[in-house]
Image (cartoon, rainbow, N blue to C red; front, side, top):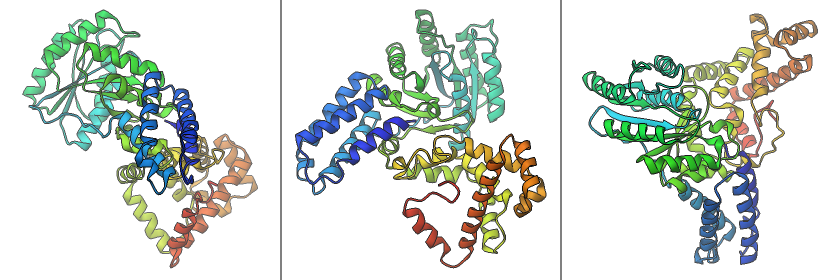
Length: 453
């Protein structure tokens, strides 16, 4: 998310970084480019106008004019205004109420409500240590109840059954009683969606809300719907006392206009981002971290958190011990590293969080998407166990067989072997005294890991 906006904004504000002084003229020119970048990102026009006006007011004020580094002061203003626009700070769920805490989930059809409930259930059980039950009041969409049941089983939470011939209010009331008797901490209620906002749907959700009195009423919205996302959130907010928004499909949205518009238009915070299809692909929304990524300054905090949560520490320690003993880095080790990289969102997802990476060329293999990494894994899978452990035995006839088995070309196999050799040399340096320091110096110079440059 934010790829296009990040590229435009970071290059625009960087032009001011070395300026000795800022005048109204060069600020006007910069703000014009910022305005165009926001509009191209599908940010709602009223939001853009207010944002530009606020930045201009502060940029022409004393805090920039008296600064030792006006260019950097201007960047800070843009950063602070982006953070303010998206909600200042992360707002967590209200879970301190008398259990079961009821969370009502609403949204349009196709926005990803049911999938988000599965992800939210996993988040609450694993991160908040809560016992969770889920129920579906969607009696209209075919297989909606079965879909939630499947997701509940997948993430290991209690599913409360319901039937299409039951009334939604009856289903919800029975679910609340069940959650009480089973001492559940949280009950998440899935509601029916429609392809558009209509009066019948609104009345049903209003009645549901009045019946269960939820502690949280979350609106799920597809980020790729752009300005429509903010407008539909506003319509729901006028009918329901929303407490927050879950923005879905952010991994497929390169613009990010919805994230910048929703808070301003609805006054309600974005609480979570859906970042992929996996059950773990839900992350709390931190405006300060997102603003930093938009301006190309990275998000080291989130990167460290992802490493803590998603990297297999046992595998990492095993590889470290292996390298320390001077043993060779083979294809099995490379495959393990590639799989862990994919588990963290792929190379593009990792680079997005590294400071300065936004300014790197986009034609680096694997930067735009992760097809190259998937291809590398496919080639390794096509090798025999012996070839994976001893890649040096792979000669011409073996290369042709591996290429045919992985659906690639011989030159792709050659490229992987070359990348493996480079990483093998790098790992050998790690095992020598001072090797880590030399590698860190190389990375500080803006380089990518061998094989990716």
